[in-house]
Amino acid sequence: MSTSLSSGIPDVSGELEQFMTLEQFIIDRQNQFPHSAAAFSRLLRDLSVAAKIINRNICQAGILDVLGESGTVNVQDEHQKKLDEIADRELVRALRKGGECCLIGSEEQAETISMNSNQESHGQYAVFFDPLDGSSNTDINASVGTIFSVYLLPEDWTGNEDDVLDVALQPGAEQVAAGYVAYGSSTMFVFTTGHGVNGFTLDPSIGEFLLTRPDLTIPDHGSTYSVNEADIEDFSPELRDFLTWMKRTDPETGDRIRARYIGSFVSDFHRTLLGGGLYVYPATDNYPEGKLRLMYECNPMAFLVEQAGGSASTGYKRVMDVQPTDLHQRVPLYIGSVPLVEAAERFLQGEQTLDD
Ligand code: AHG
Ligand code: MN
Ligand code: MN
Image 1 (cartoon, rainbow, N blue to C red):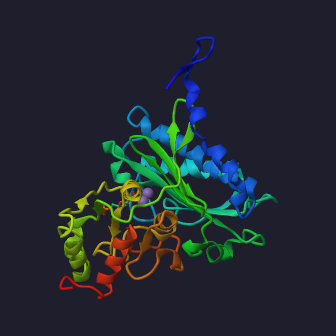
Image 2 (cartoon, rainbow, N blue to C red):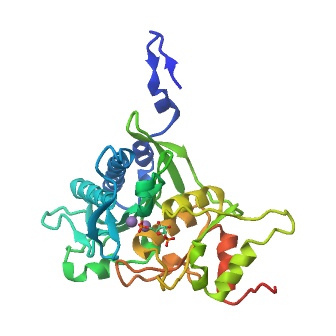
Image 3 (cartoon, helix red, strand yellow):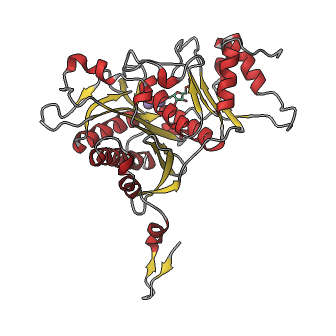
């Protein structure tokens, strides 16, 4: 929306009067950060800068030589895409340059990366991330994302490599921030610091993330569910009964829930957060513990969904109560509107059947 100044010169930056930038938002809420507000603000800024650089590579894929596989295999035994490596590199660079992060755990790196340990003032934060989620979508122009999870490490931790996992692998309930970037029809930065969930849309013409989705809350009743039903033969009988129950025609409204599955957790989660519903990645033959990783996919989204009034479970336990034992450990995931997560838990735990 352009308005003309008295001089008649079009004022195309009118949106800055209308919208709050991510930086303004963070500065205005520094009193909410229970630790060093300035350092924490800089950490969030570093993550948003990396997001803009990753976004540029994604938006110019094909023009830039960033499509296809890189020819390497990561610790997950997955063939890496070029954009997996680019996203990983940009996040490591931004966090190393920013100086607030002393430890990184990435889907694309077998071990954690200690940073700044050779400097006196090393940062306080550990950041776990999935640099590019939904990699199978990169070459078909479908949505992908970045997921991050932030912990505060003990002041007295000296950066000693021997105890790094003991110090860093904390339950999700200890997160001080979590968020994701959804590179979709628009690019959104959605995050929480434990005081609700807020979404920002990138205006590439000014390079700013602008607050467009304040105080996001997940509806209790949604219209979609996401699960890859190609694996249905692997699902437990209890899970198959739950899915049959969930897909029934609602006797009161005559409505039926709809299936949506993009193959990018960030995008399927973003839709579930905004519209309500359920995302499931259960145990399968290929992934007996589920496919999604606890530290940098399940925990951050669990923090977000709970802050938005939703729920995240392994089917048997609150995701954020799981005590991690490995950087890349996987857990089954049922995440979304509370009534649907609770119904899944009842079926999986034998407390409800199709005969009820
Ligand atoms: P990533 O690209 O980071 O490995 O994550 C892919 C995940 C998740 O984004 C998506 O929902 C799921 O894998 C799709 O798995 P299936 O192809 O087995 O359904
Ligand atoms: Mn992922
Ligand atoms: Mn990934």
